[in-house]
Image (cartoon, rainbow, N blue to C red; front, side, top):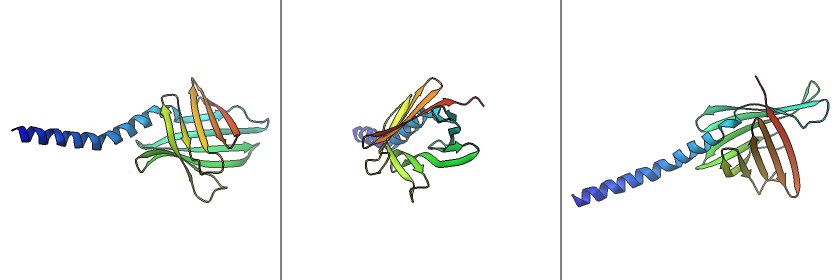
Length: 156
């Protein structure tokens, strides 16, 4: 009987260990649920506009688009994703100037923001998103340079 109880505890421990990463991943995705939707950039030069749009693909992936406009012309487009890869959460940016998508590993996440980093990338090395009410601040930085993108949630 004692051996059966020990075996049961071992099985429960193994099951708990196997399930806990998925639970944590799910929790992390729930923490960034606020990112979904349409965000209009407000700190752009006159005659320009920009936005990001995010949507859920499934319970383990968000996809987004960043678009910058100069008048009626599209001047920049980036495909964005937040995905699980090899047990870690990544922000993935696919931009025209890079031959392959660039992966930034999440280093911090909570209910109001996250930080992702890739020290091997030229720029940026760090991407940070912070939510404040209906406003969103995205900061890209690296090697002493910093770009700030201020957004408001679009009412659509």
